[in-house]
Length: 616
Image 1 (cartoon, rainbow, N blue to C red):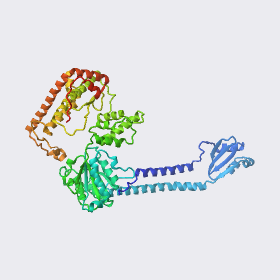
Image 2: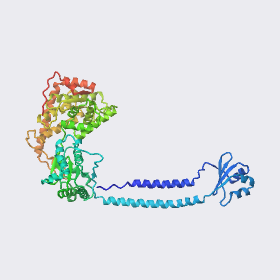
Image 3: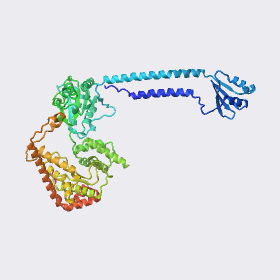
Image 4: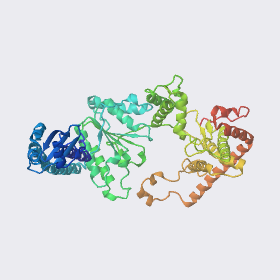
């Protein structure tokens, strides 16, 4: 088990300061007589008031004389050391009868003075002793930290606080089915070992960020009810060579003692990259850590029942030795959820939230293509925040739909007010996108058109697919490029010039055209890939990186990319010119309303024949 952390040293310092302050305060109270508000008089005045009968009572404490008059007022004076108050009054000529009638109290200060002197003498020594104790404990703590420098920093998952099971994971049915075998082995190892079966020593979870890799690992620990050691790949690596390897040894040693158990290494690509590709040479700390992981995983004794689960979204950069059988010999892909899976994830993240009866989670799921599990969780949380902000008790469809827009496009920036001309340019720009995309069969249906600023954009045209698609055709890409150029072309045709608003559209269109040529083989160059992304992963490889195609091929690529964009631009110009009056009409309405829904937008085409949408 991990060592408990030492208490913060600042807490000790504050404790000693508080003790010292209490001691000083106690000492001050002992010296304070509480009579600082009384008036001081001379000894002669005291004698005169005694002779005149104004004194009610007298208290003598050492050399101080406290006086209370008949009218209740209080005075004080001082006498010489060693002299008696009776002698002073008698020598001053005060009548003996008057002295006898005055109540005079002599207070013994010798015992209090003894304790006061003792306390004053001891306090400095106590403070010195406390200081040395503090220094010794600090040195001991530093020594413990130095001794634990090479210890593992893995956190042990506390199942008692929050137990995660497969019921908390939705949308990854295939991954859960694969991992259920791991759970069954941890619960019933004899069932497999009896027929000579060996459970995989390592399981690699591969998927995009936010797809639920870490959640699946926690669910395995919850289902199997075994110790769960969690650590990030970056926590192994330190500035000093050998520390990461030492922590790996310590982690696996703890795991073997707690077997059966699970070790979960998140973001393993931090230490699992290809060896020999960096600039650190053979003594690179990351490579030493990776070597130790490889050794520990392949050196497990039979029957230790320690399973290593790792997660990464970059499987292409992992060292081949890490993925071979005997180490991470099972790879499970945690893919992006489809519509049905997104609906299941929505049910998981909204089961503790009050939903209105009108909420259709299926519709919301269909409206969120490309969302990961983390995105859907964020969507549900944003809807709950919006509902609470509006003082409502249940989450409705409107709140969920607004949250989708916020997650996808960012919050509305209503404070960003456009002038009349900028608003008109933005409206014609967005309508150019929408109309071009609407009449082309390869583009998705228009979901919303808005000139309300969101995020970094002044307006937005939102296309939403009717169903999840896994393949894209050349014609679809060509139509999407036309749609991206719709805003640029509309500005050019209606205002006679272009603005900076089309910059992002042009960048996306150019990247899409270049990918058609270099990655997808959708050009006259034929079925060939230009450029190798694997050679651009490490800084060390960048220095010696050489393109896998000639300058002549590069020139042809540029020519073909420009040809695709020019052809799309000409096609877009024809569409915008043909629907010029309609674009002008829609843009005028958009300036007034600021937002048009998909249903409102389609009504403008009720008498216009539009090609049937493609299904690829």
